[in-house]
Image (cartoon, rainbow, N blue to C red; front, side, top):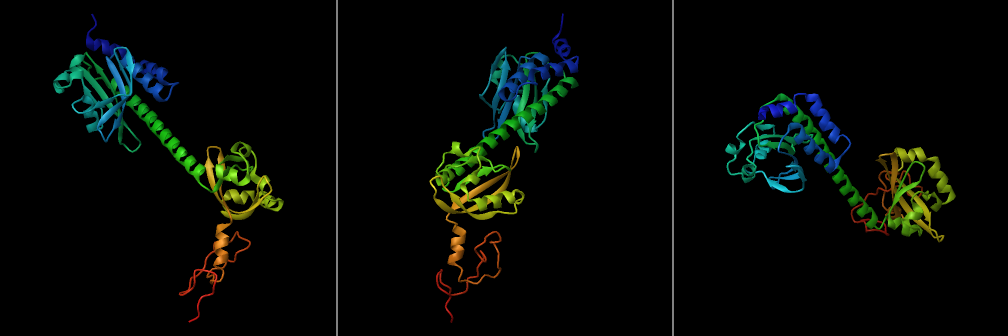
Length: 337
């Protein structure tokens, strides 16, 4: 007759087989499905009553179940208070915790342990790349679980894998949040904005630029905005393509020609950006050339550094001016004594 110890040992006698079973169960899935496959495979390989993987919520000292497998049933997304549980030791110690037997004696007030007459527990923390605890991986059984290096090796491997997956999910969520914030800002601003690739093809554009030229987003994305500029300016942009993408030009004056033929003086502020496909240009388009208009109003003031701030401006001597004491706001020369 097989003893409890023999039953557990028999399931992990071949570490490579155990690893293969878990890897086969988790290799082709990500996200929630990965966590579900992990706890099911881990429980079956170690022949335990239950297995779970959780995310640690530091502010409330709770664990949120990413996947929980027990008695042949899979559940998730519920909260566990860690106080008075074996998982609390994992979080507190930030290391693997193993109770081979008599776990109830250590946590006599834990009703969940008493309900299944739990005997043994094994848990490991999920650590992020900075060493902070972000969750835990654990199994619980109604039989003793003797200490075996093979079990701990398996646990360390898949705790690290679960941690990597949880960090990936968090990073993806942060990226989506940032994208949503970016899109909200871009779409609600009054200034025109567009992204272009190296062929001057629009990959994204906001509503303000569409209103400026009298086109919808669908009419702009996938096409070149150079059709909205005069021929000489179009040639200038094409001839200086490499300099534009190298970031040598950050501000340019130009004229946008709307669909109805209106010519709109603009100041274009460009930035070299990077996406997953390579370099793109993000360009803000300000109607009215506000910077040059302000420079014209201040032109009666001395320019201490000729050309400063206007190296790419054909009209202004400088965009930097000295403000003598007693000078009016603009339009008049300073008082002389």
